[in-house]
Each structure stands twice: as structure tokens, then as C-alpha cells.
Image 1: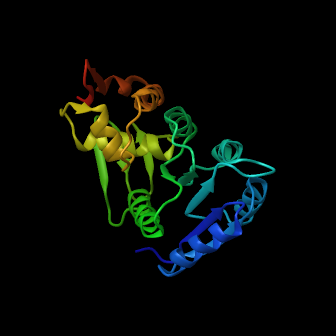
Image 2: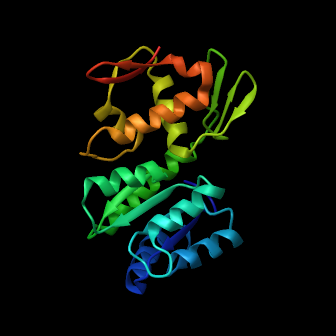
Length: 223
């Protein structure tokens, strides 16, 4: 699918890192490893071309949450969070920080590989895909959004949310449909994560944010 894709696997369990490395290497990905969050930041600093990070939450030195906060200060690299927790509030919290996918332990390595491939395809699509609506230009290949020629700094999830909304102009989309389509994830929590992303997206779009309308009792639509 993509050549020379680097994936950073961050987990304090060597056995888990080896398991992920074996399965992902079989797909010709280049795998880098780190046993804690601080090491992960050091590795990322030396390898800014990393395409995706698989990040465990419970780790010594620097846990997954703290690591993600530091990462998001310098990069919007896609992140898959590994968690043994099934608590809804933790997942909402993660989406707020910029998690792209969740996978709960224990998991099937084949399912994880499928999630990795799906996320990479969404984040790095092939071909020339440019959407333009009322001065908003969305370049899905370069992952750049401009408004009247001025670049807008969006997180990966904000970008995907805007693209999904503009791909469905005039269609009332439920929160559940948006979550399942944009997060590619069977998410059964409350709607705070989608509402939070919409709020941030509207703010970044400025006056163009008025295109995103709230559909009472359902969700949102781009009009």
C-alpha cells in the first residue's frame, strides 16, 4: 500500500512489542520500538517520518496519556491507543487528546493489522483528491486545508471530520454515523467526543464554520 512506512510500537511489555513487530513486519512495515513514553518521544525526535504510533496507556516513566500530550504539541501523527480499560470516560478523554483509534487488550493481532492498514489508508490516501466548498479547499493527499488561500491548522481527526461532512453536503448525519465513519470504530459512548471536535472545527474555520449546522436531536450537517 505504502512504501517505507515506519510504525513506532510503544509498550513496556517486550512480549507485546515482539508480537506486534512480527505481525506488522510481515506486511513490510518498518517497526521501531520503545519501552516507555520518554523513549518513544526520543525515537520520534530522531525519526520524524514515522507514519503511525501504537501507544500503550499503562507504562512506567511516562504513561500513554502524558506521551500523547507531548506528541500533539509537535505532530499530528496518527495514534492507535492500546488499553486494557473499557471505561467510556477514558476513551472520550483520549479522543479529546487526539487518539485516532482504540484497541482494547486482549486483541487479535490480525484485527490490529487491519485497523493499522485502514487508518493508514484514511490518513494517507492515494490519488489526487481535492474538495472545494465556498472557499474551503481540502487536499486529501497533502492533508492540507485552506480557506480563501490561507492554511488552517487542523488535527488529523478534525481534518477527517471536515472531509466527511463536506463529502455529505446537505445530509443530516447522526452522531453515531459520524463516529462510526470518521473514527472507523464501533464506539458506544456518549456524544461528547463528537461535539467537542465539532466545536473546535467550527472555531478554526471562523466564519466558514457556520456551514456546519446542528440538527437538533440527531447530529450535524454541512449546508
